[in-house]
Length: 419
Length: 172
Image (cartoon, chains in turn green, red):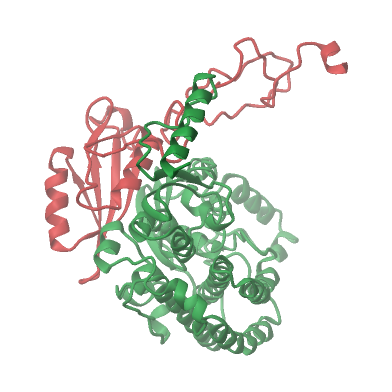
């Protein structure tokens, strides 16, 4: 039986099933046409969460790719409107769950803009310390999953092993491994605990060697290079058009990093370089991320060196509850604490947008206040949401296997995409 | 950072000239002004808020574009900035703002069969006040609440769960 005859026979079976009421299987059918529409996800090991792709394929070649999202939508922006300004942090932090500090950071900076308050230097440095360490954990997960998708399984174990080191430090400082709710409007919730310096030194001692180990594992690996060089191409113009930011844009030659170009907190006090590549393929993105991990380690060392003494949050009593020691002595302090926790503080009417450089690009928070104790609107510009639009551009005309590499290199976090 | 309000009729023209100047759109979000300064008395209720950046001169701006008519309508700028494709779908999904000229304007985060636009200020979140007195009530008439798949005579208890028909049914 020829190939065409076989396909006609298959077609007849499908038509019969449709007539019997099994639902529509094909919309139009041409036996000579090899194109087919395949659904990938939402539950698929290579889609990094609940991303669903509708693929139009011609054999192994991707003709069109359409991301379908919303499977993790839980209405977080709506929920924020129901919290007071302080407690909305606990919701915002759960959006991009691999980089919780950046969500809190962007949101807190936007609220501080509305309140028109300053964060003390120590608060700023603690924020930067946690953010830079968080950038490493996020890139390590990307590194691990990218390796896994390319068939280098051991890379996954190494990535998560080192991530554990840093996540333990987060647990030591904030009490939680993820979704910390640590950075709040006005500063950070707690001071660094005793022994933080030794813990950071431990990380700084181990990590550079491990990063070299990763370079040995993948950077020169012929299989990895074969699967990533020239794959998932995107140009700088396309990045500009689609609002793609972060490592993807920097791998296409866009020299833009908010930490250097629009310095927030105390980044202007630190010396660092922005890793840049021009090829715009999956391998270039891998190189940018590896270089950024090294840069972040360097920044962590500088921050730990320069860590100033003093307050770690704005001590304005209108904003910050009184310390525990005072509450043990004074009834007024207890009442004050109770009022701040149950009712929160009002924020002057207005709107503010403030971005930070997250591991995936520009993460911005847009908040609107009507003068009340709850956000009127709290929108988060999540980089994953917009970066995902570059997937069809990267994959059109490529192979299905290259599609997998492209998804891994975009590093979409579905919690942030769907919010 | 400056804030500027743009009329919907001038939006496409304005967008094209800004794109030519090198402005890059970073975000487009909906906004419902129902509870903000005057709210419903204003001539428009819905807006979109666009965040734009010009990397070459390190400049940022924020634009409010007002939606007009019923349903609220704004011309689409997907042909100017590709980023707007997802963002406008989100604003449509969450606020019911229509974007003229958007190819494939459909819900993006909520399911296709959903009714209502969740981020509108008059959309109930389905919260149930806890009432300790034994009062029968139904929660299904909250605006926008999906009653998809529920029979009309089903009664819900205070936690929003379906009550069994009677005690016998529970013991079986």
